[in-house]
Length: 99
Image (cartoon, rainbow, N blue to C red):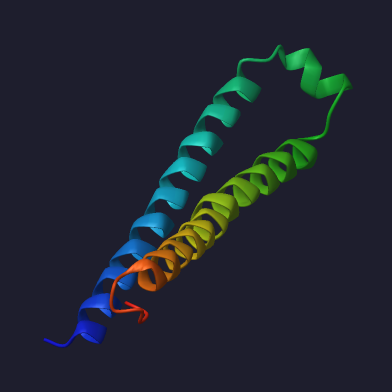
């Protein structure tokens, strides 16, 4: 198997893992957020807030967390690894890039 095939496999595995991690964390956060909302006194929902506001807040916060974990962390790690490869590629004795 060529090096590009191995790299593609590792990149696909990394992307899948970060997406799965983002999904799990946002699901856990939604459950805990809903449990905390349901622990409130029922009078809170009658006078202070509408149901749609609670659902919107839970969903928007969970989507932001999922996006941060699934996309932004993945891109940050990829940029860091490319930078490390560049540094070690130029500092090797052969003076050529290693990818």
